[in-house]
Image (cartoon, rainbow, N blue to C red; front, side, top):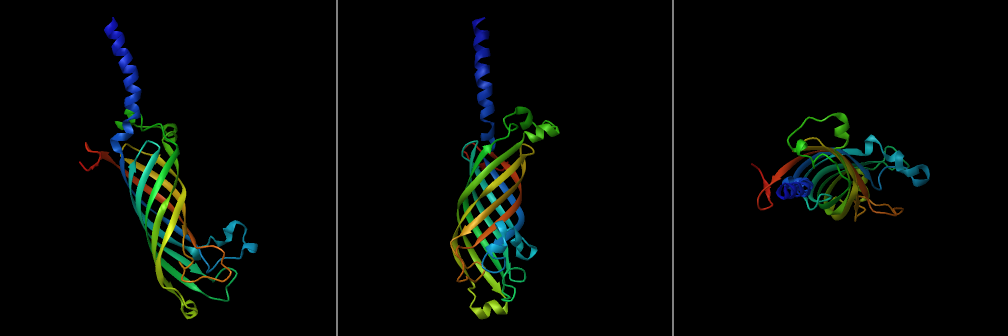
Length: 248
């Protein structure tokens, strides 16, 4: 009788503990993302007095795209660190805004490596379930319990190359360079299966330069800023015996 009681007690403590460790089976994640890019520099846009919250500057003329790849490592269940490499195009154009007569136009290609930390302030309930790990079919209300929400921030650099029109080149355009950047933003992830996640992420970058569009104005009061809206796909890699990702 005492042996049965002991076994039951061990199971009661062991099962919750083992559930809590399931995330360690897949600590490495490979993520790809793509989406539109939005640039806020010194070319294009309306003056602050004519542009509440900057919403009038969100136009097709100032929108291009970005693609990125990430390798993530889960330090704890709530904290990730990731290496990120992004290629993007940024566009700045005076055709619509407060300086249409000036006529400047610039397209900037950037390559941005970054180290980013993620904090999950809302975690899903699915990945701690053995039934989920085994691939049990889920219903809509169960999918809603499979959402993660996180905030991220980090540091990185941006290598940029600017191509401008004749008016901008005549003014004395800066053709490129390198600058530090600070990325930060929010994201959400759907834990679709034990191996696959889908997500969306919006993040801004503050650059330590005012020349991402090759130009700065005497009226400029801040450095350049750009944003990415990314739709992501994540593949979770199994953790090997030495803690490294396993491709088997």
